[in-house]
Amino acid sequence: MKRHETEWKGFLRMDGSKGIRNLILVVYTVDCAKHVAERISEGETDIHLIGFPGCKDNEYATRLLISLSQHPNVGAALFVGLGCEYTQPDRLCEIVKKSGRSSYWFLIQEEGGTEKSIRKGKEIVEKMRNEINKTTSKVSMGFEDLVIGCACGGSDATSGLAGNPLAGIFIDRLVDSGGRAVFEEIVELVGLLPLLEDRSATAGAKKELTAAYNKMGLYCKGVCHYSITPGNYAGGLSTIEEKSLGAFAKSGSRPIKGVIKVSEKPPEPGLWLMDTVPDDYYMQFGYTDPNDSEGLMNLLSSGTQIILFVTGRGSVIGCPISPVIKITGNSYTFQKMEEDMDINAGKILTGESNFKEVVDELQNLVVRVCKGEKTKSEVLGHREFYIPYKYQTQNRRNG
Image (cartoon, rainbow, N blue to C red; front, side, top):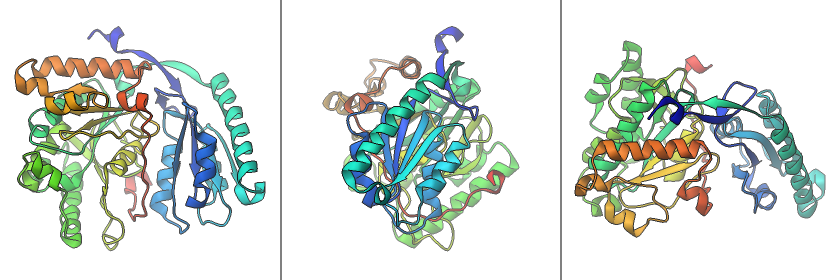
């Protein structure tokens, strides 16, 4: 594609980030405030909902709420609390305001209950909408401004043959254009340490990748679980190593710059692996990637404006904040679930198309989505999210 064909207008945030959507986020800080937050956001296409159910303090969840509220696709955030929980909405609001976003908060206990809080929330939302519509500048964007995440779920034998390799070729194009790419699911890299080390961009990156891999091994042994399911077996996969080889294909072929953790952003252009595993001493506290929704939220926390989701068996989920493009390497799955699938990589296996043709199709779709076209999950209203209790420290380079 010519350069002008891969450029579009995006939304400039005061912190310098650029988004492809201009959304308002409603965040509840405890499950007791969930109903009110849902009522505030329901029926509004530009308002997305997330929240943390726990009353107990959890630094991991707090960092997630903050990073998601400062996402490039988010222009404003409203924090709704009950009042007696540990995670206080006023503190989150203060942090998000420093990023230049419109941000407000209130406590249901202080407002006098459910209906009064819903009315107040809707008034604030309308105020924030007017603010971001008036003050948000539009700027030129290209692939060099994108952070794209890639995950897979419901894998089958076609995932490693077509779906994930297709995503990997596109990731190579993105990285070559100066963009940033993040892939996760380190628990699906079992047996692949030599491949990770060979792809390391630097000695420092190799050290990070080796440490993350070794921690993953201890974690899987500790919880007596590897990331392979009955659905994977039914789809033709035989072992976690075979599944891992297919999952690794979505990372493409470019050097891996290093490892980031949940809620950390890629510090420079290139390809990055996200470590989602709980840290040492806390491995029994909080499963990593217990469902696909958590994996998507992890990628969102690194600032991904778009997420590629590869599924051979089929999936219906989306997520808040960023469009999800669903790719399948199984033509039968695409035909059966066409209302949910965006790209059919199965055409490569049947001989109807080749990799270049379908990668071009994916690239064209990415550009159209950046220009405002909705993905299948956006059209259907899928905004699933999951924020668990977990313990994980941050990398030193990110403070």
